[in-house]
Image (cartoon, rainbow, N blue to C red; front, side, top):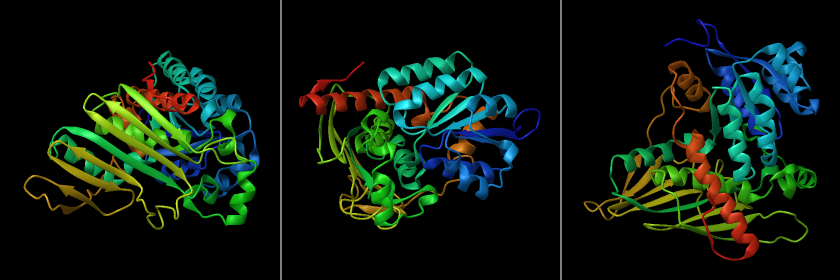
Length: 364
């Protein structure tokens, strides 16, 4: 397997640090034997401070202007982590430089924006991938394998509940913030700004419906109904419930900022993750857990299975994306824009349903 170009390592830049996941993705680049960070860029230099220190980035590779960053470093891949509602403008700004783009979730702030992103990258002949961290959880990977093997028959329902205490309670690498710090950040963060794509629905529904589309073998629903909470003194929701009606039945996707605990420390109740019901069995797949629970006609009482052990190149988005590029194949599953677009259709439909307080047909 060749690496980069003519055996050289892949050159990667990180542009826009709105989302704290930039630190996690850069760590994966730093740990990759055939990749190196050649540039960091953000209009607010202080947001790059931890990454500069963690990955020993020289001053000559730190920028506040994305054009200078791209022109001087000439990267192969750009990682983008902007606020949700600006994914389109950032993709359109970076794509003309002829780089592959890995956009951190969610896909976009709207379906129209998602289509702009797809079109902008298609013009360049490069690849656009969207990273959903839940895609890499061994429990969900194992659940998908069992679904594909037909262990529970045809999928008829997907039930999803996920979230955390709130986006201000942690930073990169899941480092916890104090309640006092979380409250302070909440007053200024884009996560709580409606015009920037804030809210639990925009933050977490994409996870559920994109992986839900994956579990449903890329089937799209017919209509969508959504209800959101309306917290006082906030512009955005912290709790949403979306019901999607498919030809084969109903699926439910619930998002929550304000779980009792963060699932990566202690699973809250309800547990964060998925329950998948097929016509011949069920699978319960929860975030971070080491086993999944399965029911089959042979064992209706249910049994636990250990989760699959991830192996290269399927341990994370960076090594997977670079492997696809090296082999000249398109990304698949939840990272593929075609799958993400179905998820975005559901998200836009849910937002419209919540706004108009009615069931809506799936937006096209």
